Image (tube, rainbow, N blue to C red; front, side, top):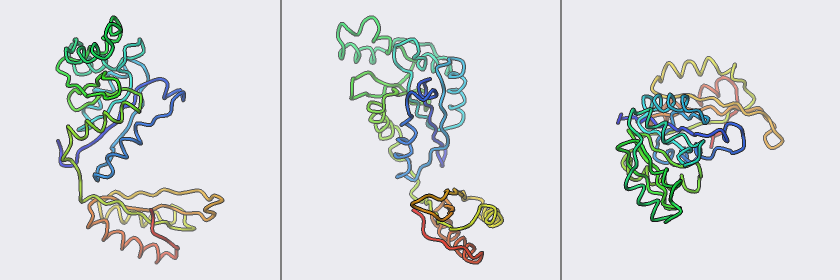
Length: 253
């Protein structure tokens, strides 16, 4: 794994894209990575389309060190993720004895003939325990597949992070921001470009916020993220620049 690991999320299901369900997985991953000083690099939502899902999983494998995939691992006709993963990694879809045993133990005679299909996984897949109902998720080549139900999936996500990535973190990472009042991004653009050139290792972000009843003044959240020492130094200079331009500011949250 690279020194700066890349993390991705794939959320699978037409119900998310149609608006019948709201995604809760991306916020859950961010909530778990941020305290470690880690960042989610990208997230994608993919409908129940086999060809698109296969291409998305292949691309995900190339673009991240770890990918958390949610949804589509059940046994209904619209659950395509298990077969898509097998195709993406060019592995046969085979009955996993360990997964089968867990499903049969949980459901007894009701495991057959349908529930046991959830034990058909890409050959060589590792299992992700599911404390909610014992139907496991699975991992293949840095991609970790979990169900779409947040109540199940997020406990499984915690297990994946604790088991596969216990020591990965970036204690030196820092993100700081200030609020700049009554300014437009256009008025700050030259300063932003200057800081991007002066500190190429840092990431600068600018997030305008429209006035509201609670915050009637126009404001911009302007900040930097990267190594702690550089962020601290650059933020001092950024504050001086904002003051020199005549804009009021306050510490961000």
